[in-house]
Image 1 (tube, helix red, strand yellow):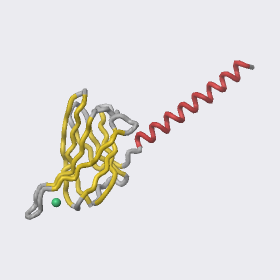
Image 2 (tube, rainbow, N blue to C red; image 1 turned 90 degrees about the vertical axis):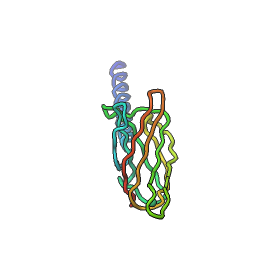
Image 3 (cartoon, rainbow, N blue to C red; image 1 turned 120 degrees about the vertical axis):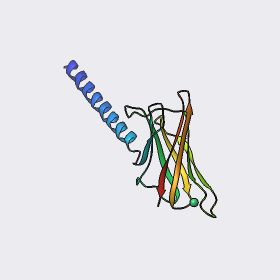
Image 4 (cartoon, rainbow, N blue to C red; image 1 turned 60 degrees about the vertical axis):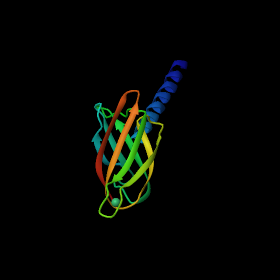
Length: 143
Ligand SMILES: [Cu+2]
């Protein structure tokens, strides 16, 4: 009888662990909708995402995720994200850097940025850590 009780307690515990793992998986995947992904060297991909999958004008939150070839988040150390727009006619060069902070998931960064105007921006992303460094840039349209 004692054995059966112990077994059921274990079963419940395991079920709980599986539930927690499933929830953890779900929350680490809830990094919003991808705006764009690009290779960033070292066999890694960087993904810019937010709630809507679209960059908008004004203050907003974005997520930056670095993943390896197996789509697993990788801790890259220090990361940076800047939105750059070259000079256009009489309009000067614009740079809207995001302030990035780490999250509980290594390799996933949360950023706040103020996009000043609609149009095509270059998302400039770089990282530097013990595993090395890399950078990329790709166009993103702000609406
Ligand atoms: Cu501009």
